[in-house]
Amino acid sequence: MLDLLIKNGRVVDGSGLPAFTADVAVRDGRIVKIGQGTESARHTVNAAGKVVAPGFIDPHTHFDAQLLWDGYAKPALSHGVTTIVPGNCSLSLAPLKAKHRMKLVGMFNQIEEMPLKAFREGVEWDWETFSDYVARIKRGLAINVAPLVGHSVLRLWVMDDAAMQRIATDAEIAQMQDLLRQCLDAGAVGLSTSFIDMDETLQPVPSRYADPRELDALAAVLAQYGRVLQVVPEFYDPDLTIARVDQLAELSLRHGIPTTFSPLFVNADNAAAVDRVMARVDEQFARGARVWPQVQTRPIDISFCFAVPSLLFIRFPSWYRLMRFGNHADVIAAFRDGEQRTALIAEAAMMNALWPRLVLRQANSPANRSLVGKTLAEIAQLRQTTPVDAMIDLSIEEDLDAHFLAADMGHNDDARVAALLGHPRVHIGASDGGAHILSFATYGDTGFLFSRFVRETALLGIEAAVKKITSDTASIWGIAERGLLRAGFVADIVVFDPATIGRGAEYYVQDVPGDGSRYVRDSVGVDTVIVGGAVAWSQAHGYTDACRGEVLPAAVSA
Ligand SMILES: [Zn+2]
Picture 1 (cartoon, rainbow, N blue to C red):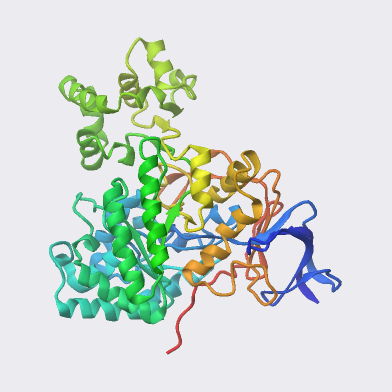
Picture 2 (cartoon, rainbow, N blue to C red):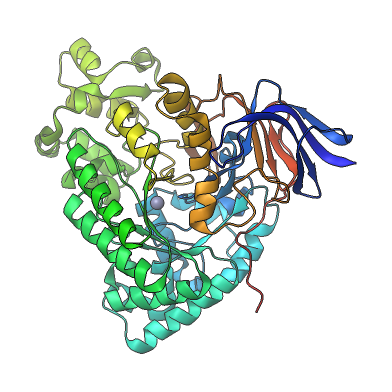
């Protein structure tokens, strides 16, 4: 007797080979046969007309906190994602001493735009070590988690305040190595570091104070385990990015480890720069180095309101200072004050091409509700004012709860993005799921890969697209026995309709602890998501309580 039989689907097995029609049989959490199913099964999924693929793997997320109150990483699981990698960008929630908790929360708030209240009200802080954190998230885990350790937290643990003041001594580096070993033993998939991020006081995060010998020493530990190094380079500058590609290549060659960096965007003003970065990546691969650029599928869309700091304003110092360090009343007061308002508008002029294009996406007062969906250009015309003035006025009228959308800010040239996504060295990821929850909803980036690049523009084949987010990812990250539909492999499987899969509309929902809100997307065209051989979510019945998620690549036995 089988546990599960998925009948008559088009099997796209993750290898990149052509699809074929078959039944997929599952028993005891594993795929036992792909072919003609004759044995009876406890549960049957009719997949006629649908694609049966390995579960998707999302290698760049920040679900670290959400996993503490939501073992499904909603709604990622419903989009077909069966494995997530949290702990990116030098930040993880462990190892973390009690005295550093609020420091780390501040960094998560600044860098990943995760609300302070969610940490205060949604998190019971009952761990310090990595193994205790792993034990904690394993309770009620419905999705697989391959967690990175953040370099910034290793530094904090070992160096306290000095982590944000200076390079480490030899003794401190040795302690960081020991600590990293403990994390890898407890199941961490690798180490993340950042060369760019800032904390809540706008000072560089701890990882940025490391000198090259510290990173080299930590890479040596990764080498003992064959694990991954993830890096955020100075992505706004192609020359600095290329220098980081070279640095990663040296670490990869010297230690024999895979490395990956993100983000890498194709914008109208940097197309040539992306070609240069990719040329250097190809050169380094030719030398034998593994430096995988990570590229997202979706265009850059940013939503914001003035109640919380937004990354859209990071290039406008007066605006950003006001949002970051001012409270609600300070922002309203500045918008009302003639002098401050004039100064803000003058600073905003450096992106005057942007403001008219912004769309009002939410307003609560009856007077303004009819304006929702209009651009600031249209609203400014109705009100006989400028787009920036309209944005400020609406924000005052809505008590800062007016939401604006800056759509298609870049990475939206389909042909160029598809060429990059299809490049054999490019690793698809960078969803940032669980982070930036008030700026955008990236859930459905995988659906968007299929809707935009496979179905609508036919720039990628379905077999290639599936391979990119399943077996390629599993290979790069050293995640064994997943990412392919093969007899003997773990049964992480997604059944979807290739004619309808997409990312769903973005909407605002209040489901974050501490009355927090976020943007999400419901899955479209995904039929059934199976984790560890059990249905974890289905279109018909929603989330189940099977909870077969595991922490990968799993603890190392001594
Ligand atoms: Zn990130």
